Image (cartoon, rainbow, N blue to C red; front, side):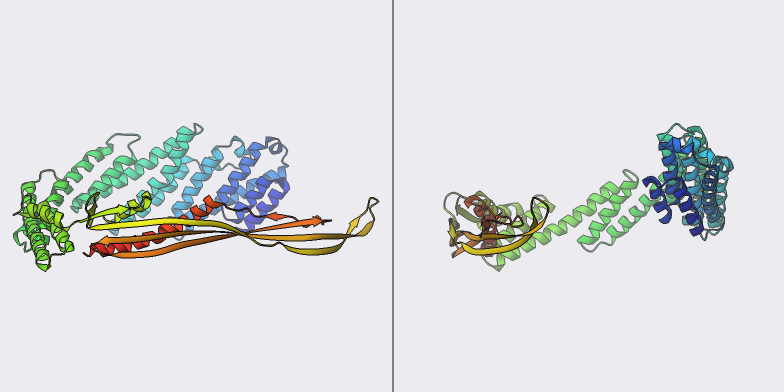
Length: 514
């Protein structure tokens, strides 16, 4: 192939040094041979005047190189190390046929489409696929046999269909090959389907018959009864799996010892109905298993709720107890007195809190953190959370730093002569610092007491550089802008929110332990 590439490189240089042909050279270098052919053909389509001026020697060399590329893929088809390599080579020969078919002038370079017409390409595919399929089938490697057919659906058939749908040129020629390949694939899938039926692998048979029906559906509805066989296999497989799940459910229900066993039994009965709607008495048995599981779960939740009450009279215990009683009522509606106890201890366990502060984002954060712990009230509260904020902003300026400078620089006079010119000037540096400080205080009163003062500080150093006097052109003034009070506050505010949020988390945690 290296020799092929070097010869092609010579041809391209003879024909043209245009950018497009350089791209073709690069494609060859990257072993993208078909892409390179496409670039060359596209080049001559865009420049038909150059096509007519090609010298016979150059035309023959291009023809020879195209032939060498075809021989390269044909050799892989015949002598490749694996079926995958050989199929890919056949696929590339198909791509070359389609590519050359797009350009009417391609016959000036190669007679490939005559030598490798669609019948020849079909025979190559038919030989490869049939030989490999029969080998895999004979060795009972049905997965490999299925995969070889799937490859044909995903590669050559897909390539052909895209060409058929996108262009009318050579459409019927490609359609005929597509039909033959589709029929070849469909017939092999049917062979697999029948074998799977013999083995009573009905789910595999369903898959194979469905693939057969899909493969040839463009040309014939229910090809060789494949759609009916697909549905029959599907129904049989569904009945088998429904019965298997039903039996597992019955066994699990019979020997159930705990909630998990009953849940698993209910799941098996539900699965049986997924395969066959209303299978036997699976609906009733699922309800029975679910009810028994829920009854066990309700008793456990109720007992846990009572245990929390025995642990003490803290609001935390009351909230936990209320949660368990609610769960018991969810499992079995009206279970014992769970609903009454849930309502009672919900009220006793919840923290009533109020907020003194007017920053909505902070208030919302407190409310979010307190969900499940308490409820916000406007009247008498168990806990009062208060916060206050203020801030200072100022700008500090400093005396300028002035440096006297003198430089001798060579330049040209009006006559173009080199002269030395002296520059005397001043460099003036100014620095300003703007600062902002946000202070806040947060306190908690009631069932817990907490107080803390904190602050956020931020500064921005602003520099300016100016020149005065006879200043050389290479020296440029530099000026940084003051952010101002509003922007400084916004920058500091994000840090403030982050810090106070962390404190709120700590406070809420302490409240939650009450």
